[in-house]
Length: 356
Image 1 (cartoon, helix red, strand yellow):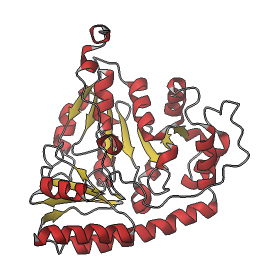
Image 2 (cartoon, helix red, strand yellow):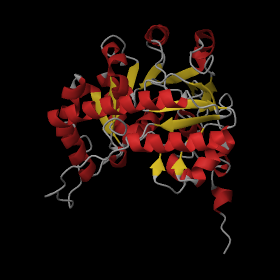
Image 3 (cartoon, rainbow, N blue to C red):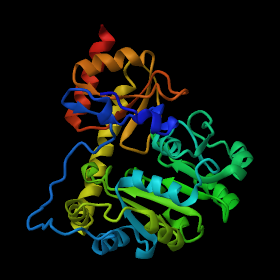
């Protein structure tokens, strides 16, 4: 039977091209280096959990643990289903569809613009200079049309930190006018580069955090929004009644214990050493034109012929992430840092391609 659903749907949603996450793209293999996940799983106890009651919307113990970890007051913290929900909540609070705009800086995380598109919010896209630097002159030019600015730092997929002086400049220009969101999903890999200290200085600053990356807990979907208490109060008005399930809350609380935070830091050191090794090996390969400097758990690599390399590795069960969807990143592949064994398999496979 034919459906008339498309006739009664929003036309922009009918023709919307959905964001393709790493899992949606698919692939079959044993080496997954395409989603910036931590390569080793964390093990936590889930005994004696009762599931017949709804969880708290904002679990007190979890927020207290993150408050201690981040040295931020509990009144300035919101917990959500990963950072993606927080990105969406901010648009719900501050943007009127068809009227207001957000601002993004490609190449960057695609969900900022995708969520805006879904809500009918215009995206003012200002490409980065050399794929690394924010164009401050163009930012100033379009600020009057903007409600929210999304800046990913460290940036995904390039891996670089955005200059703190530029961020401060933007915060000064937008104070009382525009919300500036700094997405620090990968900040644990370079924690000394966080701008969390600016929260007390700028009421329009929002920082997004997650347990998905360095904590190795992508599967529990737990993110945090750090912001002025007035912003947190507004976000609480529009968030779902029970954003996190009880098992996720329980695991997140365990992960934010002193012991597990120390464990996370040690794992980050180990992974960063893997990155240094992988980087040095990649530099020797004649398939590669350029490697971006990265503060994260991934490397953006410019190949001479990325398409062939990607598909040969794909067929061998080594799953990477193409970046051809970004206009300025043709022939680029993003490689998540895996275990030493996984990195070695990747290097050996690239050597074989180079020799053939």
